[in-house]
Each structure stands twice: as structure tokens, then as C-alpha cells.
Length: 496
Image (cartoon, rainbow, N blue to C red; front, side):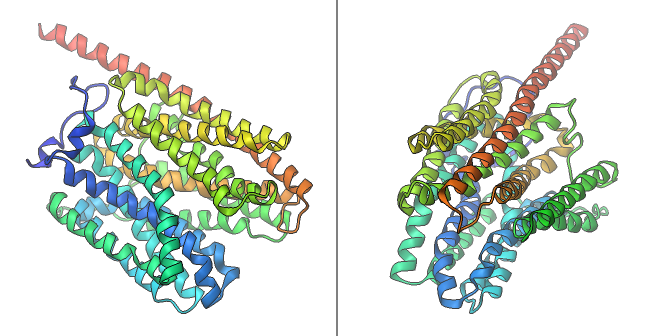
């Protein structure tokens, strides 16, 4: 069966009713290769992060460069965001197949540079290429979901990708640690190369070839992309500033730059953002705020929770890491349960429960620090993971559904990019908050308590804002659906 014949199946409020998809359909010959391809694209991103974060300390011990350690994450994230922002334009120019293959080649080149590095600057150069390539791959894989699968299977695809993330959370550190201890950190870095090769083969077999447009392609907005990259880089740099005023100034400047780019892009003929992005009157606009704010709030736990468990409550690295895995497991299991629900309307209504559970989880972490009770961390992490699991896949699908058809590629490619931007901004805000409370590696336990408490309070406020946008998104989507159904009924009467 040619998957291309499903490309034009309608989605959204105007879609005709379809039978609910089953998990087993993803394993049928019609869809198995497509499922494996997209999940492997996600796996390249997920496993790569765990491979690198586990093996990099050993690499630094051999090639030195500990002062540049944080830049391995910073540069990867910045260039992943840039790659994601460019993905829709490249897909329009080269087609999905050509774009994915080119991005995979860039990713492999970066992996080889990092794997053979003899100094930390060479590792950072490899991370730049890795981030740029993987940012494009993640964005295009999102864009391909509604093209390669009918609407009834889209929730199941997001559920399958959640399983990949859970596997990465468990298997990534385990595989990387084994390779690093029994072979070399270079082996842990290089294991991505055969995975990328398999991905390219699957892309060639599954993704339909597209004719390159003979008409003039849309120009690439290089200046806006460079400014976006500068803004994100400034956000990351702000966390390393040695004085609080300098940190505040860098963060404020970065956020101002990003706001100005969004305003300029809205008026541009060839925009990066989908039409209606971040507006409060459309479900696409409010939904994108949720996509930004939920990771922004959750960044507090990603950055400071493991550190707090080890240094405030004296957990071992393995026990502290379990807390992070607990959140990933909760996310995956909840995503699978939600994807199994037959009612699309119910899944959409549950979107607002995501930010609510995130807020409850972050409030739990705040209380855990306030009363010095580490056992509250575990149910709080479960709630945070469930918040993402119950909402993320359906929210992503809804953003594609409420986009105009010609904007769908741009919207779907923008989702993972915006998620990365949320984590980057959240990391900077959490860093600023903690530093204002005197947080550093030599701080007393009491000071750490105070800093962590304030970080989670700020994160809770941000998650409350995401809850407002989540509720508004569900309401606006419901109104849009009712209007569309009313229009269809009037059309049917007119036809009679």
C-alpha cells in the first residue's frame, strides 16, 4: 500500500467520522515501516541526549575542558532550535525525503567530529552539527505524522513516541554507561552513527519522493533566524553571568529580542511562525502558549531536582536519577492510556488537565522542599509526567488540526522547536531565580533549601499561566468545532 494515498485525508472539525484506530494497526505492513521511521527519528534525539550526558564527564576527564561542559548542552539546544525553525522551509524546497537525508548527514558529521575529538572545542563543534541536524529531523518527523497516517492513528503515533522517550530515559544511561566503562566514551558517542544509517535507509524506503518545485522557492529568512539564534544564545549565556544585574540584563535583552522577532515575523511576507501564532483569540495561538509554558515551568525540575536530591537529601546519583525516570515513565504510561481513548472530543477536553496536573506536581515539589519531606517528590514527579502524558500528544494533534492546510507543515515543524525554546527560557529563569537566592556549589543546605523553594514557586506560577491557556484552548477549539458543524449542517440543508 502506498501511504501517500492517505495524505489528503481531512483532519480537524471538518473531518468525516472515522473508526477509531487501534494500536495493532501501527504494526501492520501498511504502517509498520512509517512507525519505525518516525520513532527512530525521535530516538536519535532522545537517546543522543542521554548518551552524551552520561559519557561526557568521562570525556572531559581525558581531554579536559570542564569549564566548557555546559556549552555542550547550550550549543546543541540553540542549533536544534535554529534547525527546527528552518525545517518547514527546507521541506518545501527539498521535500521531506531530501531534507531528512541531508539533516541525517549533518547529524552524522557532527557525531563523527565529537567522537574523534581530541579537545573540548572539537566536541562543541560536533554538538553544533548534531543539534542543527537533529532539530531538522525532529521537526520534519512531526510534520510527517499527519501525512503518513490517517487521523484515527495520530494519537497512537504520539503514544508510540512517548514509549520511545521512556525507553531512552531507562536505556540511554544504561547503554552509555556500559560502553563508557567497558570500552570508551567514544563508543558511547559513536553509537548514533549506525542508528542514523538505519534511519536514512528507512527514509529512502518509506518517505515518498517529491518533485522539486520549478517555481521560485520562498526565500530563507536568514536574518530573522540569526536574530532568533542570538536571542536563545543570550538566554543560555545569561545563566553563566557572574553578577545578578548582568544576568538580569542579559535575560531581559534576550526576551526583548525574541518578542521583537515575533512581531516582525507576523508582518513578514515569508514568515517563520504559522499564522495566528500566540494570538489569544484562536486555539492555535493559545495552544502554542501551552506548548511553550509547560516545558518552561518543568525545566525547574529537570535542572534542580536531581541536584537537590543529591545535595539536600543525600541521595545517591542512581536514586536521584530514578526520580527523573519516574517522570518519564508516568508520561509514557499516561500517553498510552490517553491514546487508547476512543473519543476524540474527550481527548481534547483532557488537554486542560495537563497543565493542571503539572501545577499540582510543581506545588508538591514546593511543599516537599518547604517541609523537608523528600517522599513528596515521587508523587509530584508522577503528577508532572502524567500532566504531559495526558495532554501533549492530543495538543500537538490539535495544533495541526486547527492550522490552515497550507500552514500545517509550518505548525507541526514548529512544535518541537517551541518546546526546546521553552526549556531554554525556563533554564535561564530558574538559574536567575536560584542565583538571586545565593545558590552555588558552596552554599549551605539552608541556602539551597531557600533557593529550591523559590525556584519551584516561580515554576508553579508559570504552570498556572499554562493552565489558563490550556482551558482557553479547549474552549476556543470547542467553539470552532461547533461553528464548523453548524456550517456543515447549513450546507447540507442548502443542498437539499
